[in-house]
Image 1 (cartoon, one colour):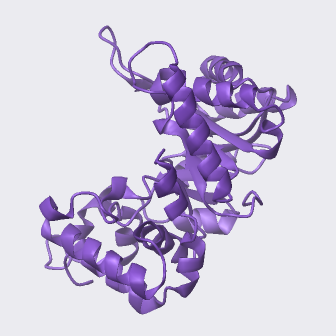
Image 2 (cartoon, rainbow, N blue to C red; image 1 turned 180 degrees about the vertical axis):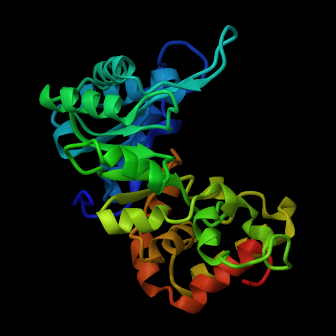
Length: 326
């Protein structure tokens, strides 16, 4: 079920906390976090998305500094974080670890950095082939019983992987966070590539559909799993970042976004996000910019989605893929 916070947008906190290198939190990092969080709140956003690995933990830490500076703020927010990725070092490669011991330790670390007693939603960041779903279920049950976690969700999981995990859970999975955007269209291309010959004239741009297992969105819809979209703005790919040097399809799509922003009385950011939100899967975009002006530009995305008709929606899809649909 969707958390009822008044807007479908979420704020992604990966950009907070300075650089990815180890080091202390600087005063400028705290100021940036305050400004970004204020802009998100002004836009009606109350769900803040974290991961224990963002900026090596500094994203959660700087967010915790903001919460400490503003007593009472945490009670009005829905805090979400992820665990399960182990960052690579000079000694060992990056990998996944969703073992019960690691989940418990990572949650404790996130709680300490955020300075809160409970995480509203915990996501398993990526599937760990070595951890049985039963172990994840047991770890979540223990955390929930201890009052440390409210809901369990996943990120970057297929419908089949979700079904396997759900089969051993006592609570319904709440969320699946996936890379969904106008630029990363495997989730959409896979739905129309049925019976299309490989290498056909219209099949080319759907090549990334192979990495997106068809049926995942349908599983979420059938079981009431909230769909969240990371990378939803494609780093400004269609809303103002580098159109002059962009490849042809991106240039055409960016120009169409700009024209549509005028026609639908919205910003380019709201058009890009509104395109996602126009889909009947009730997608909730995660916006990751820390620029207050760009955060504000996203505010009307849901209203723009309501004004976007099917001709607008298909025109954007076809422009971004650079070829007609099959």
